[in-house]
Length: 199
Image 1 (cartoon, rainbow, N blue to C red):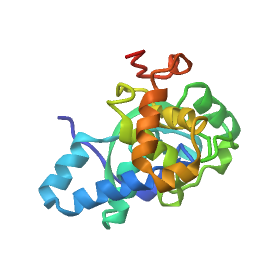
Image 2 (cartoon, rainbow, N blue to C red):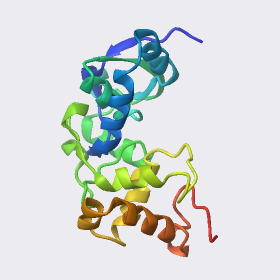
Image 3 (tube, rainbow, N blue to C red):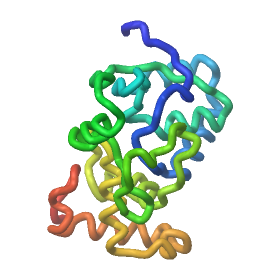
Image 4 (cartoon, helix red, strand yellow):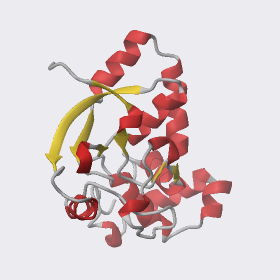
């Protein structure tokens, strides 16, 4: 394995507005049980891919949940993965336009509304909860196939929002998951990444 560079999580700008806090809590609980060596191995297996943006700032394009969970257990560093692009020559507006065009950011809030990319927080600790993303993660593998598509779980979460209420998520997650699995097989979902088709 090539040498990976360690970096402070605070030096990585997020590229999404929200994350699934239940997923963060689950990961943090697991990582609290890890030895230093196991934690290092986890980081080596999940280096953070990024894009170089204006002022040579690094923008993480994956592993937001990992970074937040590491912060929650008091670990402030990750290992840098591959630089997917260097758009440091662009101004901030052009940079975010390019990021959106390439599908490398998710400026969608918890209610499914597109927000200006400039509203994306500067630190992963400032990202807010998205229970729809949590729901999508909970049914991954049963409702849809896991693919290496950026923001796949957010896409499915947005889809599920049109079939149920936040109140259902809060009061009966098991029922919400059953419904999510059922609606994942509808024709309306066929353009989503990982669509499994009719049973």
